[in-house]
Length: 182
Image 1 (cartoon, rainbow, N blue to C red):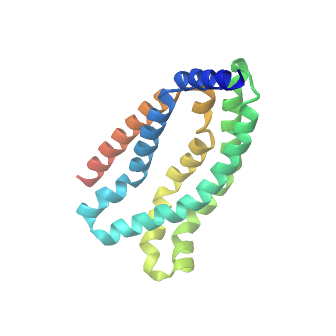
Image 2 (cartoon, rainbow, N blue to C red; image 1 turned 45 degrees about the horizontal axis):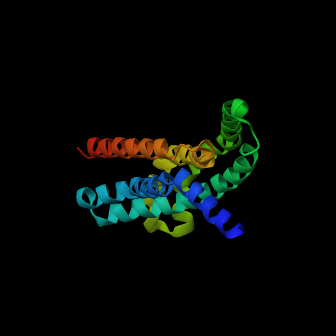
Image 3 (spheres, one colour; image 1 turned 45 degrees about the vertical axis):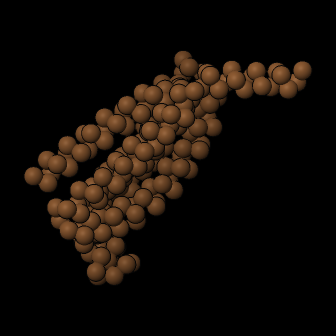
């Protein structure tokens, strides 16, 4: 009896969440493509050295932003699961404001020091990467906020909408890169 109930329960859950693996996989592919799209654009237009500088800049900027956003995400996700649907929007809004207040004071320090810190830490050959990091600083601060709240779609079960939103941003990023190149 227990096995039959377990199999029936698994089938019910599988049918209920059957779109999750499909859209989660597509969302992940689109997200990764969007992260590395500028490198693909830099290669034919500016050469491998600038593509390498850009890729290096993204890599060194991603490490601290991932660390901060994953830490915030874990706390947010554990607290958000306890909130009911009525207070959820207010909760997400309050968390967003607190994240901005938390990371904003460091923004200007990081922004104006990256150009000098990167060549100091990695050597003078990486001065262009320091400049790239300075230009990308705003983008990475937005990524910290976004990545901190990324699991909201799991709580709201809106994985399909998340995929379409990320696909839209990929198209928007592609258009912006084409416009920038030309």
